[in-house]
Length: 327
Image 1 (cartoon, rainbow, N blue to C red):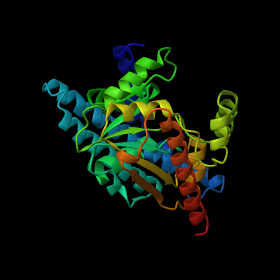
Image 2: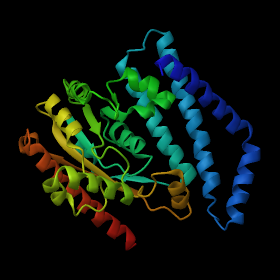
Image 3: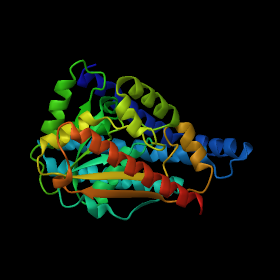
């Protein structure tokens, strides 16, 4: 589908959803709350998730309108203006998430993201990971991100418009020419400045036990030695090294920042989100660890190094989950 065709569908659908959710609020809110209470869900998770959906549609609509105004005033390629819009969007979505669901985020060591340039390798466990990382990078660390995202996210109108005006890459995971995709990632991290960080999710998809087992089965068939190194992973998927390596190759001086979180585990689908909202949520903990570029190997040694570092991330997640479970 062409860009124009996609936007002619996604933008009207977004505006329609925003208007309908607002106009019908007196109808669906009490019905959703009643539905929850009848099922014994006294924290009304369905009602609160729909309230967040209402906030999301209007914040998205505002982002699309502002981006249209920037285009109309010949500022479509005004990068600072679009970064300010992205920061506003992420901050207000996180505020809406906190108000409607009670979910709070603690990012105690986001200082590891500064100074840039840096390349952040993030654990991927939930539907909210892109928003979470964007909020930490833009609002907490006050940095400007360059994202590697899957092209399916172009169905989100605000991500589609603003994301394509900023230095991001929407990855085609089914591309027949992976070389072209990797070249694009090398270009993405090239020439980053001191206030910029390139972000990728090396697992390639949200981690679940079923996906972990499938990934390990494929790895055992393709590379038994590497599978043996990663056999003990419990909370993350085996990392796909090619994309991370391409970002690293694109900028010869950027440090590497590993990022992981706990508190969003199991939120890989809407059913998981509803189950999560049935109980009082503990704060989401977002952690980072920075590695000097001088300690990052190149070539084939990078994959082994990445596997070792990803094992450290897995253990850090396990420790945090154990700590949260003891509360």
